Image (cartoon, rainbow, N blue to C red):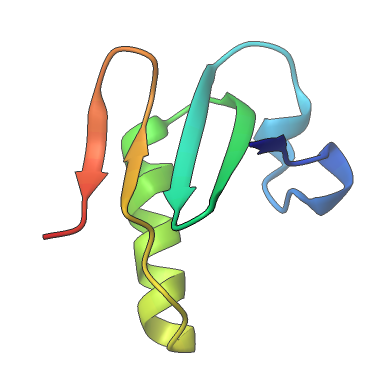
Length: 72
């Protein structure tokens, strides 16, 4: 598990305090994004990007309290 650094974030909102921590779980790796203001929209953008780029979909995307997306 590793935290994605601010320098790799693209949305300006992710640089301001507040929001939720989101875990994007791939086989053998979990990426942790903090300061996510709109977790469901964030999850949707991760899935859309993976599909557009033809990269591997995560196994799940979750916050501490909620599974936002799960690979079926």
